[in-house]
Image (cartoon, rainbow, N blue to C red; front, side, top):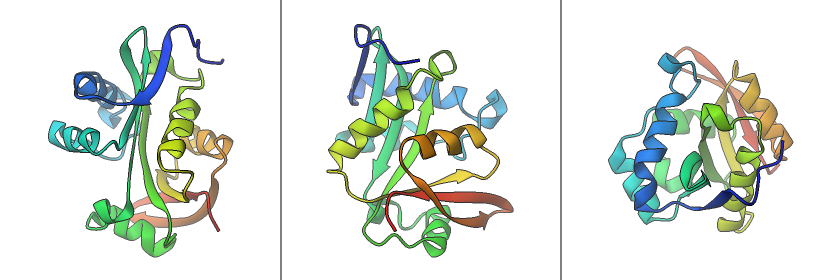
Length: 167
């Protein structure tokens, strides 16, 4: 289903979006039936928004989803990112993710719409991300967005697939 342009806005997040972003994040945590790999604190979102590294989808003015993206150097110290980059260096790629859509807005094209806005913000540079191997919905969505499965790695006894836009 295509998002309704009458009620949907996809754009860079503002500080006013943080509570909505945190609510969508909670919906996507494993204990709530989701498959998000990590919980980010409010301060992380505040910083990412200040640096223009979060895109949100708003439906009727309320946050329906978000995607984070950063230059690789911003997350190079994070162990799971280090493991991903060992599996697939992607030297010119920025880091994509997480991408989360609220449960009542899934399968409406929001992830793809947010990804297009993210890509424009990053001037269509190469992109790399990781997804839990067992997260078939996210893997399928990323393939539909034009990424390819480039490598696999394991971190803390969990298998991940690396998706990327570049060779």
